[in-house]
Image (cartoon, rainbow, N blue to C red; front, top):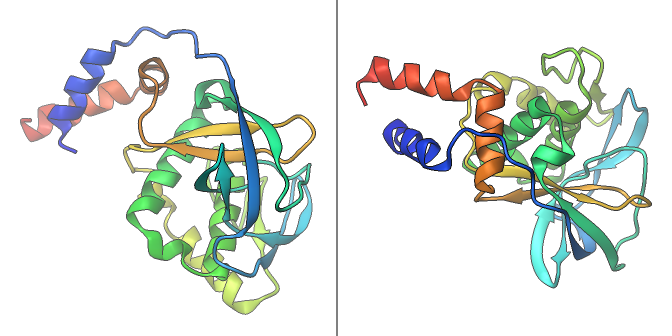
Length: 222
């Protein structure tokens, strides 16, 4: 998307922070891992060791894929659960919302980083990294959240993905990270292609991206 079109879209949206839309209910049924497996990882803070990867299932009867958005609860496959769909600006802090939105946008443009059980486990680890890391820098090998695997091919996938944070962190989001929330079951990531206008404006204004885009426009003459 050209910077000129992005800036026009921002102007149309307005920069005033608005109240996020209320959560809506949805029926979620997770049928299994998208890429088989799963591959296993071990993570710290919160501690977890076991399967990781992208899930496939249905959301109100429609096929969708998702990643786990927490490490402290569980769920069963092929079981209907009622979840609340919570706007990303409500569900996450601004840095987490932006980080996840950048990550899912980057993944959509680089699907080969999620086309096997090993790579899917690495991608799930990256989702957890954005959610749980508190140091301000994403690094699966260091910081307050880390991820490793005793399986060589999975560790290689983790290492390869870990080398991509520079690209991920400079991705302009075109997909956005909302959250499926159930107080008694594992929460999930919900990717949406079109954000609510107030959510997009809030994210951009809160993180100073409007000024950054304007400076890029000035330098590039668009």
